[in-house]
Length: 378
Image 1 (tube, rainbow, N blue to C red):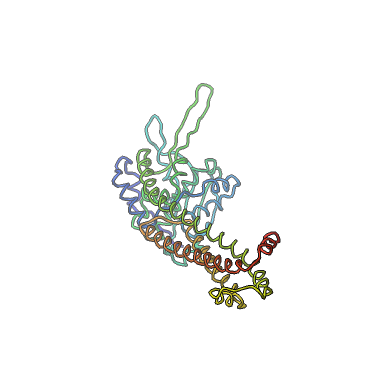
Image 2 (spheres, rainbow, N blue to C red; image 1 turned 60 degrees about the horizontal axis):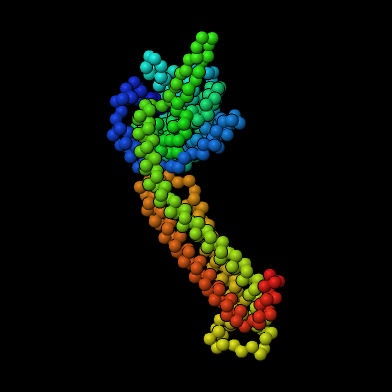
């Protein structure tokens, strides 16, 4: 199988001073990436860490890929600690581990071995060919000693796969790859896991080493993090309003479900009483309704209409509460969802009012004692 080689531009970028990347460059990259892949809420940190604690490394990496939105299958293999490739077949964490603070300034260090192959035959994103497409990942034993760091590294490496599947012009750009992982749910995890402090204790002294993973300096990372947070907040405000509307819809669904269950039990009892009360004086205006009530499928038709509304409401709730990507079209989607919610609420209120009116007509012809009996029986 042929593999995608790293471009010379990528090598130049790695060697480029971090101070050469301006905030405008980072901001433009974020805008460009959000427009292409969208923004996502935070990945489930607890779930990912739990998988690593249980030594379910492959499952954790598979979940990271899922969070990034790439439906690939991970083929995991283990390599000795410190293992390196020639950089031709793999994107590897040896490039990620670029910054370690020491008295000599910034320097590369040995770190987590996490390497991902990107085949040249990688299918286009969104096509069936990408589903369960095998991607080879190599990691070293001990790589999960710092779970959040490992997750951040893997999110970066798998972001290369995502960008290549999109045939994105910056797929080899490590800055763009860092930012891709951040905007797709790994900003907080990267923030907490990008810096690892270790201590070496000897007889005479304690030496502290701080290793920073990633291609952004602290100031650049903080700028990117704040920019992403601001954009995400704008969309989350919209989502919060949508969630409130969904809660109202869910309450209405519950309410009318309870009402139809109650009416189902009372309806036939009321009709039976009315049919036995031969001397009951009927209001002429109620005759059409009372006649309709005696039709075999009257209540079943009402129940069917309500059930159809409930099913549509549940489908909408499931659709709108699923993990989503925020992008320019999200606001339009929310507007459409809101209209559908309002239409369903209107339909529920209409059916609820009609059902209450129908039950009230029947109830008018029941004696107080009989209504009380039904109340206690039900």
